[in-house]
Length: 469
Image 1 (cartoon, one colour):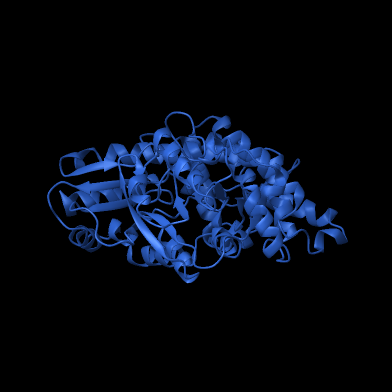
Image 2 (cartoon, rainbow, N blue to C red; image 1 turned 180 degrees about the vertical axis):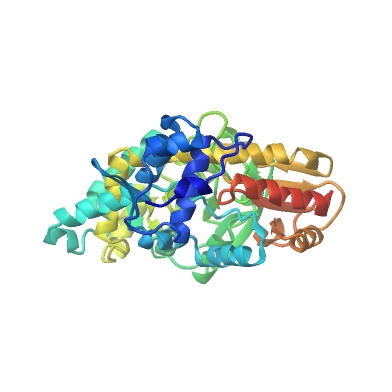
């Protein structure tokens, strides 16, 4: 047995609980290879006595490690290190390629990357996901490996339908749902459904990736300015746009939530002429820290003018690559006529795993855990940002995984971002999301905190204080 206890140094003054300190130490020992597969750990009672903590504290740490798949509890034998070599890749793979590169850069150069896109994968229930996968493959029959339905498996579409109605107020039938490998695919599929060269209106600033996809489809794009309530419908009316791409629950990147009055204006615009549609990208809808979750725009649609798009990539893991689109019935007929022969882009095995994950309550429990984790980081970030109040206006908080800092001293975004970079901190400029050209006079910086640890948030903001204040 390893003399593990002599290396653990508990810090009662730390903001982390004792069980979290034990859990993180053992987890890092396993991930670094210092603890090897099938190596036995000290008993909970022995470790508790050595560290002078309660056995409950050690049991909680061991229990968390077992639930995440780092340890294996063997009856009447004790705790052993699991065969988790394959899980290391999962811990880093879910980030998109550009996020992986930024993370690699941060590790090499010591940078603190406040990316608004990265998420925390430390608490992902790897053991649960592995168990579901194993059970499905053990029980699989030949039908599991067949091509499946073009729109996605009916069982998963029924599950998503119930989930959307309960969590977002979306009103739909399973037959209206299209399952695809990421939002990119679904937006490309819309080009076949809506037709070519459709004039699209977008909020400015907006989600740059969606804009690039629309441009790749040869769509004319108009950029509509925003006010305190979101996209300006009066400016939208001055265009010939047939489709408006909006993010009403939490606009990306501004973090703004659209009030009911502006939503009704948008729905009225869409209903005024036949063939007008709203694409609702329900970005970051799962993570809201104050008040009740906002209902979707689709929940208020009575005329079938809203195309609703969502994804599990941010709520679960980017590598899942399962998104969904709810089509109004007129467009559903177009889909069946023009795209019904397309095969599903998500494997039936992955669909079945996700369905089991949601149906058995694992998804809800995981979401609740991550809401607590992100809220803790959110509150910590806002607390650490208090000294910035004289130099910056802080907005976009209370939901999502990033905040906006608007400069009050007349400095440029480039100047602030450069000063941050020289201090070892990566921040993001709002100009990168303004597809329609330069915006307002004040510099706006985006700080994401999803993938950063509490220590990294503190240390990164301490460096920004020296660079900016």
